[in-house]
Image (cartoon, rainbow, N blue to C red; front, side, top):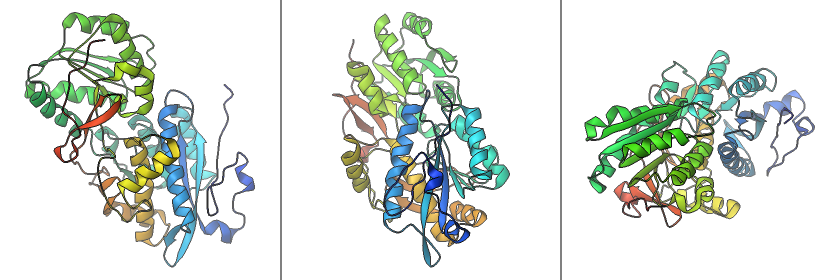
Length: 407
């Protein structure tokens, strides 16, 4: 594949896109001053392309709404928004280079982080050198936020809350399942989720019978699957990104590996995962940071969970997942901070972000001292009859937990 930069510039009342962005870019100092430029590095190709496209859909939805309303209110005027987009091809080094280009050449005002904790950590380090505020929509690993990046803010709650919720719910729903096998991708977020489960298993009465990490880019999990099968676990827990999890699930079926509980973080939350594995998705559990069953009302451009979900369904033909919602919410929060600051001055907006305490269509957003959205009760989901349903928390529960059916 020929490597090339892809940039789209969005202006005017609706949404416009062109490969020759310079032709549509504002000209003249006065016009440029009335535009808010937000950098959006996206993995539109490569191993995280599915995830990158989710972010793009959400960004486009927000952009269309905000520019149709005249833009973001800054003091006494409204300023249109331009998204400066590049495909970093799921390459962390390329993401680093492109963010440097966005800041120094494209003169972006603010930055959206790419998908995942690992790539977020990379671009946050670049942005920190230039004092550019960064909104991270899909990064929940505490290890990213403990680096002293004072300009980094994330809409996902810490991932530690996900494992605690699963331990408690599974123990109550399936008390006889006590032996857990853990297989995790050796990457920032998937590794942290695997290690969190291993660390706290004993506290909740589980015996870890298998605990291994696989390298990024692994194309065959047969050996790990075979070993887990020999150990007869009651709970199989696998972390990774969509293509990793699809491969593991199919190889589990090929080798006849079965357990009453099979958890994959976070594949079952995604439609493309369920579509890819078909009936093999039935009964799989996962954790999420959001589900459209929640019913928040807000003052952001979407107005409510229901309105966001309705628009998404009309556009895409299926339900949104937490990546879509968190990505759109990150921009909504940035918009609110700019309006609160009454300026697009980077330092003033950074300070406004640090003080944010609002309810969005996605849910409550209040950043802690490290820039992470504060912990809250997060949904546990399970695929039943081909769709994700909520097992917990009780206020949005849609079904009771079932055992994974044998292949």
